[in-house]
Length: 386
Image 1: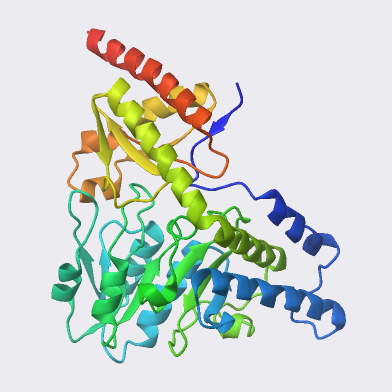
Image 2 (image 1 turned 180 degrees about the vertical axis):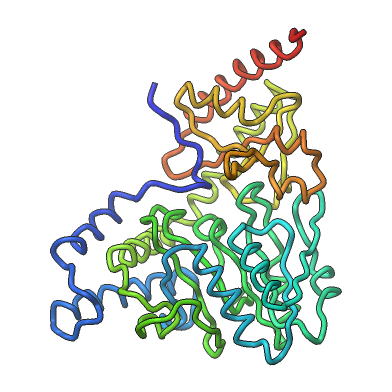
């Protein structure tokens, strides 16, 4: 049986078309884009085309609003640390949520060490916040709100457009981590009403080690790295030409197929959930039942630890993700599920299944057939355990 990869929320393979476009920039068109000779300027031109492709995919008003970074994590750090430090003269209060990606939560913890006050909004049982919570948390000292567009674990979507409307006529900057959202659901930065937005290449079938930060025209932030003047001085380093080219190509291709792929993934997700609920049972769907990413299922199987299911699937060459994170050799329950009010036991029971371009209906049926067998065996073992 061929391996079945169902962990697209973690990363995706580089598309063949993208690989073909970026490969020449490793050995043939390898010149530094900062060089003024023709060889270097060809790299520069390719980078600027990629910048336009990313800008177009986001609905940005100008390619200048795109800053290339080394990852989505770096884009989040640049947005949060850069915005807060730049505008500290206006206030020292930041608002975020309790279920953000670690690159946002850890950046906010760093701000707290620097004397900023951070409000971590609680979420409802589906993992959502409300616009009213943001409104109630605003103070005269608030300078930044950072709310992820879609949660990386449970797939729940946040009311980004509504928060954007709330903050539109205020001096408060609005950032969203759109790493999981980008490439899954059509949107534009204009309709979301954001000032800052982070994306990553390897979640949209581009290469790893490349991300981008959208910075709305007129918004000022500070750099977090210091050196040369690349990327308008906000990301000083020799530009990763192959990575940037790959991100641009992936963004362009993704934009052409987005709505069709969203519908296809939604059908596969719903088919998978329906079969699991009907044929396996004793399972909870974590996250919002409908207001969620089209490719995400986060499930808790009653009485069985998610990691045990993951390992059994792994033996059958089906690759999914556990809802629990492993840090320094110690397993910890998901901070997202705990924030949603789940018990530690429920958090440990979670399994994340994320679908992608190469996922077929046959893959779904094979997954569910194996899950039935695995859950039956594990539950039987636990029932008979002395």
